[in-house]
Image (cartoon, rainbow, N blue to C red; front, side, top):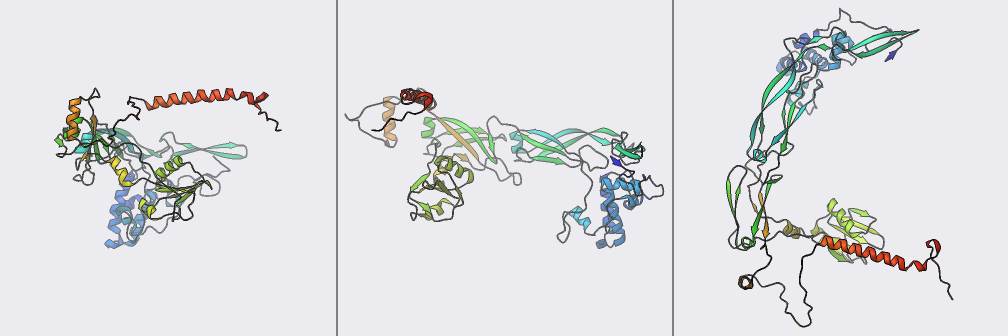
Length: 498
């Protein structure tokens, strides 16, 4: 909304400027040898052809090259092009510049140009991309696949062509003057005939079949673009159709990066005496998986590895961070999250220092000097932690990598050992096993001083709930027994001292 007789495009004097029929609005199109209905893609192609033809490094005319670059600068910008089509070069708000630098053609087409220059001139606005999810099985991601997919999109009907809107003279807006006493008000609104685009055109549906190639080893979320295959819109560079890989879950194989995982149950006899498994791989190959002769399959280690506590110790290193906290369990969580390998608690000052150096450096920097009363906690030994992660695998049988399909991850086989269902073993079998198995780690002889007890099945969660309920009842009894020590209103009553 504008007041007082002026509005955008008014070239002076407070009166609305109309379109001057004598203004040249075709020169820039003639320089690029395109029609006024040319799309942004057409203009870009034409500029490339003319710029290479007239480039000074190719023996062309420098002045002609500047004129061509100036024409492209204006026609590749939707706003400038609209003003040029209406008022000619004089109607463009921004200055004309020097007509372009010869290296801009290299910036535009070869990504960065010569002599370290950045990108070229700004081109047309790009239309919206169209994103389609692409359901892909793990088998297809392992072997690679090609899918033929049909798309339907809106394209400009070239039989009709693109014409300037007669109602708004290509401006995309209509201006209505309303006189209110001595004041003239200009009301601007989008042109209803062309939808505010300044151009008159028709679109039609076009069906195209695209061949989408899925690389071996492509990951979930991998994008496969098809440039310029979205809906067409005059004045905009056509957007892309982008297919996004959506990996479907496999019934047997689980994927983690380039590694594959499968679960298998084996019996106790297989764990002790050797196991043979058959696995049909994702490409249809049948693998016969065997344990090494004489090797037992051990259950995977579980549980938490304790931090190592050193009383009256600290480190001769500047701390990475400090905190006013001494809750050890919370401090361990902080170290795990931040990647710290050691922390020292100073209870007297309610302060903790953290270090993120390697554990080996922590060991070398330990000191007792000035550490009386302090507690130094060091992260578990990495080699011990490694033992908890160890899992049997078949090397180079995992997923291929995208850039080098011959390089593959590993196939991990996580085996769960099933013990006999009745949970017992006969005396004769026990004697036979004892002859071949290593001696017991705990070989204690029963004496009269022992109180014999037997193991039973128990649920730790149920036990914790029962203990909590018992403690709550006990606390309530304690509160009741202490009520005689309080007066009315719950105030404590002090005993008189003799």
